[in-house]
Amino acid sequence: MLARSVTRACRLTACVPAPPGPGIWGRGDEPAQARCVVKQQIRRFGLLEYHSHDLLKQFNLPVPKGFVVASAEDARSVVAQINAPSVLKSQILAGGRGKGKMDSDGRGGVRIVNSADDAFHNASNMLNHYLTTTQTPPEGLLVQKLYIYRAVDVTHEFYVALTLDRSRGSPMLLISDQGGVNIESSIDSLNRYWFSPSTGIGDGALSDIQARLHFTDTDMVSVTHILRQAFRLFCAKDATLLELNPLVRTPERAFVCIDAKFEFDDSARFRQPEIFALEPPPSDRADEREAARHGLSYVRLEGNIGNLVNGAGLAMATNDLISHFGGSSANFLDIGGKATTETLIAAFKIVTSDPRVQGILVNIFGGIVRCNMIAESILAAADALGGLRVPVVVRLQGTNSEEALKMIRDSGLNLHTETDFEAAAREIVRQTPSYQ
Image 1: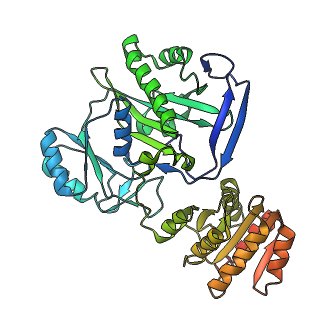
Image 2 (image 1 turned 60 degrees about the vertical axis):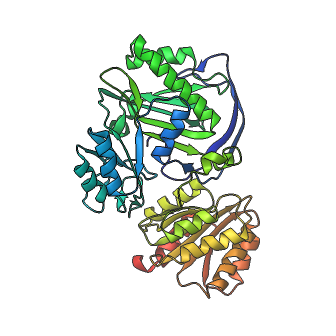
Image 3 (image 1 turned 180 degrees about the horizontal axis):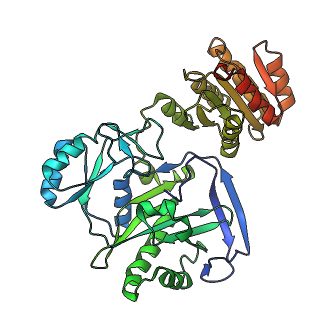
């Protein structure tokens, strides 16, 4: 997905822009000012595709009539009922399913079948198998459900997304006539429109969209309905991302939302209980389940140096710097800005319990999370684990950092402390056995 970040990064959670007047902030127009832009660290929550389609239908957006199955026999029955070429789509929270690979037969996670027996054979190779895409962990994600609908004849694919632009402090519409799998390699085709939440997508933007994407007046009746209803849905459900890719035009010049993806900020849970009740079960990986239980952002990577940081930007910079000095990170673990001693101990246990990890870098910039609390948690985790089995480099800067570093140095544990970022990254690579 183009508008979706690969990592769980800081997102804009509240913005009240001051619009320059009625209508839209145009393609290059800057808002006069933006008030109250608030950021917080979140674990983003999305919907499986069939739930997304149900949500689109509630707002009168055009989607295919779909069926959800959990067995190959049910897939056979559904396609027999449809009695026409049908699409089988793996239901996982990741994009790139069509170009992905199942661990069963090496084929993709989206398939067109022409008969009930064909549906049974393909579903057998999809259900309860792992699908790996560019947006999944290396081992892939387990496919437990398929979404099936009659194949739609397509003459053109479009890309549409509503999201939040942090740099401008406003909602943003992205639209392109290069939808589907083409959008990732056609970034230059994207048209961007910024607008006020109070006015929505104005007539000026719609006129520009018609001219740039060469929609007929008849097309624009449907396109206008889809864009405005999508914006109403985006606002009503507290979404941070609504992506229609592809939005297709049929030979009859009807428009259909084939695939839809959502993201919602955790801060909307109290307003949207029915949405968050749809949250899929945690990952089948024990470390990811444990991280999610404590509200930690954890992404498993391929290397052998464990990271424990606060802030997505710092986490990415830490991964990059470790790579720069010849190492490779085993994880992306962000404790966020509201960590407690309990969650910090949990984070440390998650990293140290990974048998691949041969060294650990703790890289904290103390602000809301005080460095002395980090130090206390490291010592408590070391005590709970009966010592540390791998080299650990601790880099602390910010609130109470001097006190924290002294606490670690006086602990008697074999921990190396640093205040300089580059020195810490270089040191953990140097101490990790694989790189000696």
